[in-house]
Image 1 (cartoon, rainbow, N blue to C red):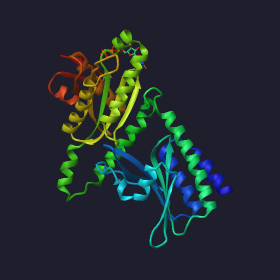
Image 2 (image 1 turned 180 degrees about the horizontal axis):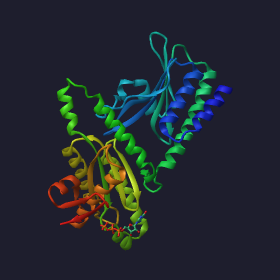
Image 3 (image 1 turned 90 degrees about the vertical axis):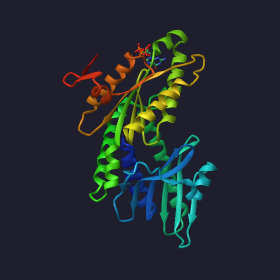
Image 4 (image 1 turned 135 degrees about the horizontal axis):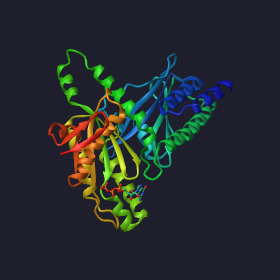
Length: 347
Ligand SMILES: Nc1nc2c(ncn2[C@@H]2O[C@H](COP(=O)(O)OP(=O)(O)OP(=O)(O)O)[C@@H](O)[C@H]2O)c(=O)[nH]1
């Protein structure tokens, strides 16, 4: 019991999803004497569910994050794990399958309402006793509640998007992943290297055009509805590995992972057009302007945001409903960046 309490204290002492995952799998591995425990992400990409491990612990080893540097790999299709697919489809609390060697694998989706985007996977050389199941069930409940609390503190209450507070942390994680990815590109891999050189991380600032007019003409409730619908369009237009934030008011920020300039342009413009072609109830047509820039670990977040803002203001002052790339504006002489005081001049 002391050990259980110690694990509970450890689990609830974290304010970070990764540390929470690590302490949960450490607790489950020790208390269930499992040979391996993993936290799996259940990601939906274009309507299909993929399974990607994010943390792992094996008996006798320390828990660790799983390498996620291959950002193009969405994970294993759920069909490859039929027991888990069936468990999710039937909204069940868990699935237990034994293989020919008698080794048991238990999957426990973490349900939040009718959605599960996380699942615990526990592998054991022997069947689970009812005591073990009971203890694991308790840990899973604490994990679910605590994950819920962490989510709540990280999300904007109107749109459900990540809030401003989480931005620096997410940006640092994305930059760290990109640095690791570069480090993995070894000499003697020319094709991969040249491919990676073209790929960058991107930051886009999105601002609703004439939003004051929407509020003034239709009232704040309709204004709020427009923001919620734009948040939905943002989430559906970008990939699961990208990150979408509401920075406040009618301003949103997107972090795009590993893609070329051409792709970044296409993805951002597709979103802009998705908004422009959407029929907003009562309000009708709404457009957005976007400023975007590539990001690197060498620049401070405030500088990166400043550049994207400059490109956004260029779009605002050149007709709106536009997506502008900072470097293209600077290279083309349309925008002069003044780094020292972080302001811009337009020609
Ligand atoms: N409904 C609603 N309105 C908000 C919210 N936050 C900020 N606003 C409104 O958003 C409007 C922003 O207006 P401005 O900054 O003048 O910009 P704009 O009208 O979008 O014009 P441009 O950006 O130049 O195209 C203001 O009227 C704010 O009151 C919110 O959470 N809900």
